Amino acid sequence: MKTAIVTDSTAYLTKEEREKYSIHMVPLSVVIDQQSYEEEVSITTVEFYDKVRNEKQLPKTTQPAIGKFVAKYQELAEDYDEVITIHLSSGISGTYQGAIQAGDMVEQIEVFGFDSEIACAVQGFYAIQAAKMAAEGKNAKEILPVLDDMRKSMEAYFIVNDLAHLQRGGRLSAGAALIGGLLQIKPILYFNDKIIEPFEKIRTRKKAMKRVEELLADAVNRHQTLDVTIIHANCPEEGQQWMDELQSQYPQCSFKLSYFGPVIGTHLGEGSVGMGWFKKNA
Image (cartoon, rainbow, N blue to C red; front, side, top):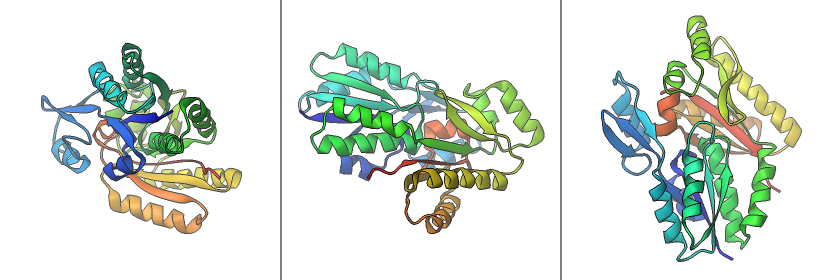
């Protein structure tokens, strides 16, 4: 039984990671000034932030057409017996539903869906774990329960400079955005029941980052060893510095630097930072 692993571009796995773990990727797109770009394919993250920095209109984001998934599954059916397709939270995008609908349309191969209920490198953790198990010959019925178990310790928090992006993009309530803007709050946001909500409202970015560090410390106390990702929106030096400081504090944990690419960056805005983790596998 050969199991293929598919995810979408918002997992922000590097090309090297996708090749190393044999993970197949279907891209979402951003539309800038009426021009559509497939993220991770026809536009890089740096190019995206350069293009939109002075744009008055927020880019639009679009999920993959169902036909893209159908074509990918049909292609994989030539070499695999089944597919596990892992996607960003169904609460903020129709990508997961589209992937499932496409699976129902393809008869040559069985498709199993997994809603990460989250996004970015934390979503990527699921894809990498699934791919490692698939490489060992494990099938979907063995892999999916492990992903469900990972969810129990999976946490992610992020801090944005401006809530307007999330509010204009429909990913956060107008009320929450207004409160943040009026009080100059830098709220810590998180995924709760598949959607983005404020976790805590904090006055400054520095204090917000310190609070996330406290949440990490609490998770280390509970789980001992973690896989951790630091995520940045085109501020790699800040992300690297934050990661280096935490790596020295928690040498028992594994750290990875990642990024908010065009689709998620559209909704968070340049300069956002985040952190996510889950209990390290034995």
